[in-house]
Image (tube, rainbow, N blue to C red; front, side):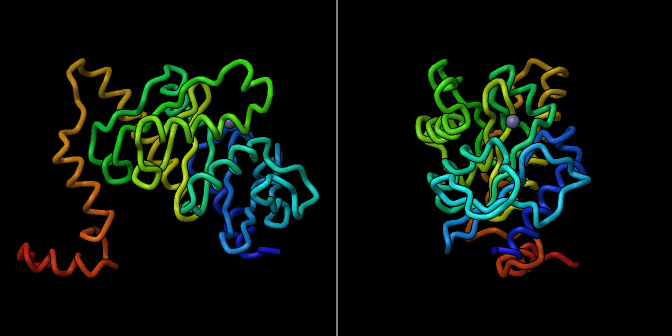
Length: 246
Ligand SMILES: [Zn+2]
C-alpha cells in the first residue's frame, strides 16, 4: 500500500541526519496521499541506519494505523492535526535542530533578517504559545498541533507563505508540498536561525529586512510573477527585459 510514497518518505527521513538536522532519532518526516486521505510516517525510535522503506507506517486522518508492524512516531497526532487543518500541504518534517531549538526555548520568533529567509519564509517564523498544563496532561501531541494552528490563526499568517513554526520550549515543525520540500524548509529554517543568532550578537540594531526587499525576494521565487530558476516562463521574459547577455 502506498509503496511509492513510503519510498519518498523514507528518503526524506534519511535526509535529516545527512543534512545535520537530527541527533539520534529526534526527528520525523511524513507525507500524505490526499486522494486516499492516508499518510505515511516514520516509525517511533528506530535508528536511521536500521530504517527501511517498508518500516513506514500508514495512518488515516483520524490517527488510526492502517498498515505497519511498528509503532508510528509519537508525534503522529501532531501530523494528523496539521494535515487536517493545513489542507494543501503534502509533507511535514519535525526536528530538534539546535539553532531552531534555541529560539524555541527563548520563545522568540526567528525574524526575517536576510534574503535567505525571504526566499523561503514570507514572515518571521513564529513561536507558538506554550501549552497549558491540562493540554499537556490530556493529549500532548494533539495539542501541539492545535497550538500550531492557533498560532497561525491568531497571527493571521498564511501557512503556505510561512511553511514552518517553532513549538515553544521544543523545536521546529516545517511543511511543504512534498516530504522533500518539508525537509528543505527545515534546513532553511535551521540556517536562518543560526544566521540570525550571529547577527544579534554583532549588533543590537534592528536588522529586520525592509518590507520592499522581503517582498522582492519572496516573490522572485513564489507566485505568478516568480522568475528565479530555469523552469519558469517568466524567467526568460525577465532576463530579456533586463537585457542580460547570458
Ligand atoms: Zn520533538
